[in-house]
Image 1: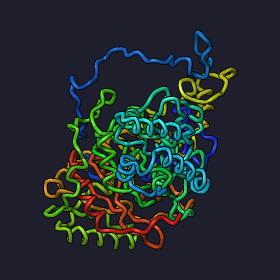
Image 2 (image 1 turned 60 degrees about the vertical axis):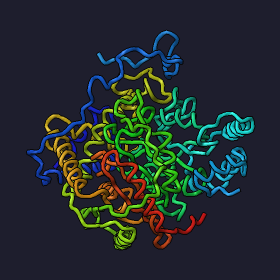
Image 3 (image 1 turned 90 degrees about the vertical axis):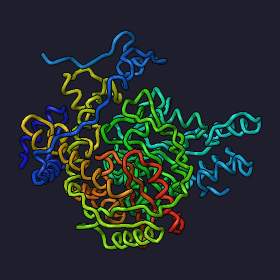
Image 4 (image 1 turned 180 degrees about the horizontal axis):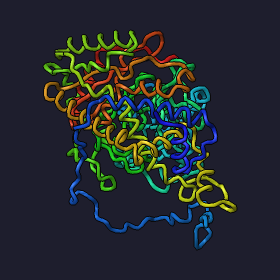
Length: 89
Length: 481
């Protein structure tokens, strides 16, 4: 059983303000508790299969120029830099 | 002007000069203006659509080469980028985001002279299955506007069903094309993973999601696939389909094919009307010369939990980019510390997206990854083994697309687990990468029921042939709008 405290801690790590306890903590708790059904799947010995893509199939790791100046589209673009909030001390 | 024609009929009529692209598009826009206030399929309408259609008519008259769409009006789910158009993902956080490039599917359709009449509604960031989680309000089912149209590609399904466009593109992460297709009585297709490029699709759960068409007929789906499927250097997960022509031989039928009925998808929780429709569909397929018998996929019982664990984990990572510096809305940074600024800005996310981000942080975290994420990945691996085993014996699999009938708006929105279980018949195709299609099958008390067929990976052509055969056995009433 997942506790409310654990959910609140993860929310903080995910940079999410949990201002409405019912909407977030209670419902998230209900959702995660449903996932406990996975415990009865009996897959402990199963290997995880992952799709493989050969290196030759990947596109070349090289710069591709973009037509527009994307940086100018940012909300806080100030001509020569992008304004960001101050970092905590 | 008959707006109720199929894509293939539209192309033929424009080619023959029976109708003009301009007139058809103009009437389509008029219809959107007339009825969409009630349905809310569209989030934005392309004001230049009629001019674009006019220029295609000019090309036709002057004998220039014209693309296969001949000005066909298409709606696009609002999580696919169209250059210089707003792409909101039905989220307030992207309210004013204008895409700087075209998604690959958009480039391909532009080359074929398609007209994008507008961007359509969806659950915010495609997280939902009713369209009720759109930040701009829900879409409504044209069969009965008190009911949900399904989701997350609800706007796509509504726009095709209510004749506000000829075809649409949606995206399917756990049934988001097939579920609304079933609820609105249109065809919805989830291709083999990798068949259609995801470049320019706003990411939710990259490892399992696919773009797919919603159309009025199975042949229209094949027509759309012919234009948008295939390799793309911008998406390394795409597969080479060798320019397969999905329309050729689509009427081949299913005589001699073996079809497995997935036991776990017709068991507990299925509505009796849906079960009866499924039995009817099986009889009809047998009548066409197929043999049907039950097959068990044991992992289906755990598939929904595995699906939500995996998708939330990927979403938690994908949505981390919404820090309001790279993507976001007007909100001054002055006076905020870095982390508190991001937390404050993220309050623009709707409740479902917020919940899934929290889950996406929780289930792969230290101490819980073994219990949730790794176990979900193991269920996924075992499910793939089980379905591959089933395809050694069967050519196709069948199950109802959704185990219940469309339900009323607001009926399930406060119960996340009951909403989860609506996905039980659709997530298997996503977790295993197999192609699946929802075909309109019957109408019960004025509400549609769709039937779902699955095929093995890269057997999309066979799947469309089977779907075409099933479609030929039914004649459905017209949507009452």
